[in-house]
Image (cartoon, rainbow, N blue to C red; front, top):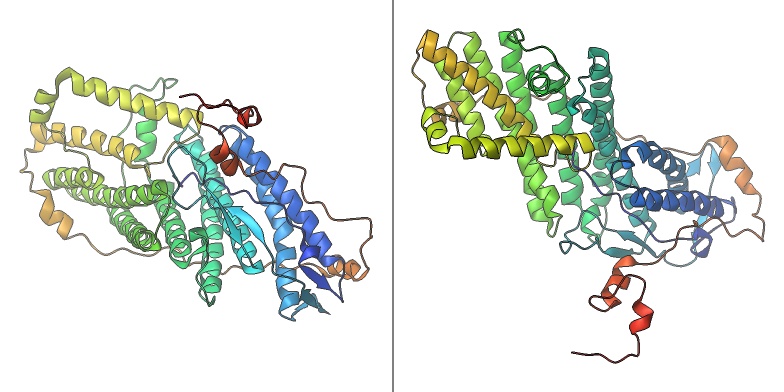
Length: 474
């Protein structure tokens, strides 16, 4: 359940005002045109309702992929490197100035993230690549949404969605790894927290943790059982007990522990980064808890398959403790009464509505969904143990302390920097038309935050001018 990133927006920018090229005079103008398309796409995406944004993500990614090669072309020209076998020379006229909205930085609750003024092509390149990584994560999120929707996906749909989500996570991880290696070479720390080394490293750890959990989700049947149980259209009142081979259950536990270790690293990096969005910090902590809870569940399944039902119950209760939930017991049920049941049903219905709407579902890192699985297993195993096995249930603390080490599954990919083809860079040798200034975008370039600051308290939006120069009444 990837984090629902808010894509940043940016101000207009004309590269010919800052760069010129003697070998390819049309390069800065062409880069301006493609950047204007990206800027408009980001602003239009921001104004879409949350339910419509996932379907618009491919358009955003297409605009990014069209603009990024031009950024690398300008960067190569400044460094005197060739492109597609051609020598490209780009000269700095004056220092570049641009603004990006820092959506990963901490902001005042209820207010939009502030804009950050940047003064280098490196900062522009980093923000654009960071935006591409966030788009990949959001595309993975939209793929995984089909697995948690009320409609049960087929086996083929499930496999296709998981494969696509895993590919997007690994692409996002490759971009973050490239950004970390690039920002580490800067002499001065970046102005924006979004493109700092701790935040970019944390995002890299987060994406690899998500990709590892997807590997487990691919063959984990228990979330599907819980989904089928609450599916209103399902007519199957009884289902066969789920069976997982013993070896795979232990393997899944080690993969989940590896994901928890990556999430813990991301959490430590975010804590050292400074003022980071609290929602992202909480999500990383919840994901770490979810991964450890899943590991305990699979170790419990491994014990139950070996006939150790009491130990399996202890593992499940330890998993609930890792998630921050209390274990289910007879004493708790007796004290809780009807009010606890109503409260639980209300929470489940609220989460189901979030999944149906597709907005802020899964912002707890999958903790609530994993809690449902653990509750189902605990009730089932406790009933079996009370009626058939009657085994002693050991304490959970010693079991949690004896968990095995994690096992890595994915090998991070290297980010391949895109380059302009020869048939694209060659026509840029011709000088641009003097009447053309490059497409900067059709959207307004107003800073909404500054407008909100200057508006009188209680003023209706758009009526700021009617309050200027008037009498103030108290």
